[in-house]
Length: 218
Image (cartoon, rainbow, N blue to C red; front, side, top):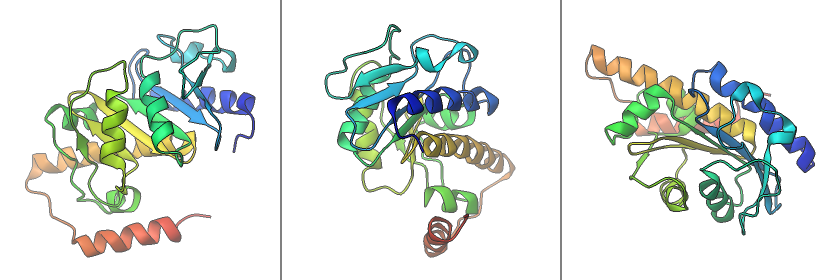
């Protein structure tokens, strides 16, 4: 886990490579940010820079309260959204935004991604919710993310006509949620092409989520 802003810059820079590697982004779209616990500064991708050209030095350091940019690079157009989420959800240490195709297809029709897979129950604890439409550039998207995810078990949300936002305790956690969001969005989409997917009992979803979040892994 990162302990200094310089460590965080390197970590956030390196994690960006996982977005094109997992086919979650195209060209320069999408971004990752990170924040150390209790710190007023966040680290976020610069605007319009190719993923392969990113360096720790090009990462933008931004004050989450004032949006002051302490970098020579222009900040991401989603900076105000990330900052709002960090202010309103202090437990969040990482945020990812993508336009990954299958999850964004669900967003384009304004539908939650239904929880019909054990992998969804494990990772998301239920459906992945679809929030309303919000314009890019200000705090509107951040407000919608916070409104929908507050009290929700899912670390992922799809925004109507837009794409995916995921949150986590760390940037890596948020990246994992983004990868898994696209994976289940694809499988659920394919299942609907074959017929009516079978529902999972809500009690079973609760048990699967509890097991995964308290027993799985090292």
